[in-house]
Amino acid sequence: MEKFSMNSSTFPITQLAQPQSRSTIEEHFADLQKLRFDATKPIKKPEAVISIVGHTISTRGNLTTLAGQAKAGKSGVLSGILVGVMARPGDTPDTLGLTISPNLEGKCVLHIDGEQSRYDHYRGLMKVLQRASRTTHPEWFHSYNLRELEIHQRRAKLKFLCEHVAKLHGGIHLIILDGGADFVLDINDQKESNEVVKFFETLAIEYECPVVIVLHFNPNSEKTRGHFGSQLERKSESVIAVAKDNDSEISTIEGKFLRNTGNLPNLQFRFDPEKGHHVYHAFKVKTTKAENKEDALRRLVDEICPDLSRVYTYSEIWKSVETATGLREASAKNRVREMVDKGHLLKDEEGGYRRIRSSSNSLKVA
Image (cartoon, rainbow, N blue to C red; front, side, top):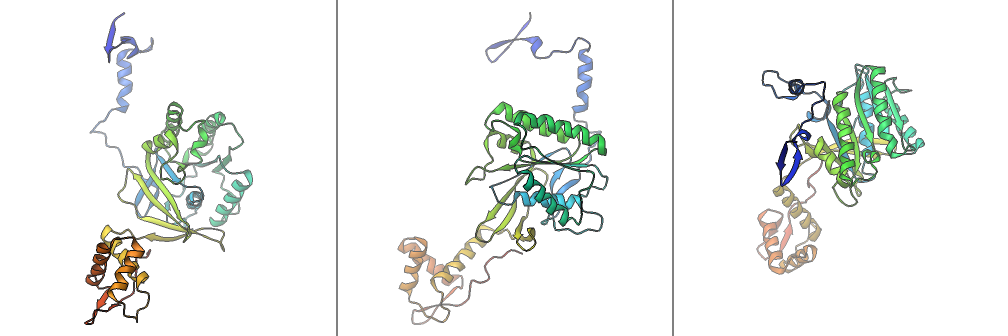
């Protein structure tokens, strides 16, 4: 048998290409032509199914990863997506600032929950229906709780569901998997992780729909869990991170990796206890390093000179800066000089210092 040498190893050359007995090499080559780039056959830019103020998040045939710490608001984002996809023409539901392509063709929207109890799953979707002004779910909406199934069964059940609902409703508009890691036994197993991510990717391509997959970050980190998380990020069109400020109770949607858009404006939402669900809050103003430094300086002046009517001595101010910041004496004195130069402190003829304006105009969301 003819041999082929590669990297000091020897392989039978037939292992490099094994055409089936009923096919010729020409037929195999012809079959590959559908995958070849052809400048004479333009491919239309896919329309966004999910976007934020014109910035594309999800398109048909692609994966989107939605990641965050536990209780950061990931389920709130999913609810906003479902409310948007259930909206009827003329409806203006609160989708937390997301723009969702409505399911006008009545194709299937498939939602899989692999984490919550049956009751929590039911309660969450009933709130979605209420927000979408519906008394019951549309026929094309299929949501399944697969938590009780063994992990090795879930992939087969999802494949079956996709095949069946696509025939039932003439296609699939959107797939949402709340708990992507629930489809793998070991998130650090490279082979298994790659296979599952490829499975998700195949679903997106075969059914020409976006697949949105929810993942958890590692504790106290902004890194998705295991090799599975890393592989999913690499294969995703967009990776969206959800973070929550525990002091303000405001969650922020940030673009972590975005293949088909530029910088994404940070979208904020919060839980409204009166309404019982998350609501849109604001778009967070993005600032430059210089603006952040200026804001920090204003806040420091507020802290060390709280009384607008009082005259402070130079010694009082630089020592207060030293205490508040941990800077050494020389650096603390330089910071005081900067406060004067920036117009936050006024030095009088007698050497006293007075705060001349408030820092209350610190950066706010708009």
